[in-house]
Length: 225
Image (cartoon, rainbow, N blue to C red; front, side):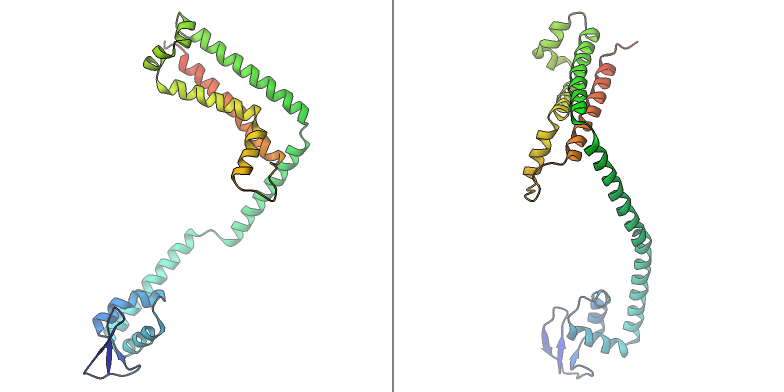
């Protein structure tokens, strides 16, 4: 008869055999059992392993052990997987929040919000600049506008915060432009125009960014006691 090796090749075997006409040694079967349990072996190997296990107590015991370990692993992972019902509830809750947010965004008066954005933006610039002038060292103009000296003495975190302040101001004033650019870059051809909720979200991020960077600017320049 023929003997099949672990690499799938067939060789002549002088000892004969039963079942499928293919014979695997016990060592080869033990090596293939993990793949057999996972169900990744071709059908002819699967049939030969089943035939071999039926007449080999050693392989049968190893197969039982592997299946028990597989069952334990599946049971352990099942506890980590969220319940399908819970996933459905979370998805429904997210959709409900999204619908409510869209309703609020669509009912918000655009002129009132636009006036607030521009007022808040100009006020933020004034406060940010005022903090710089009041809390900077004795010569504010020299310290603030002498970038060569400042870059060598001031920590980079100071300039990172100023950059974030400018980006937040751009989001607040130009949120619609950013949303339109994002829609174009993401390849949205069915609905390229940004929704009111998308624009409002970016503008709200701009408000939060201006607040955070202004507070950080104040804390950074505040003299140490």
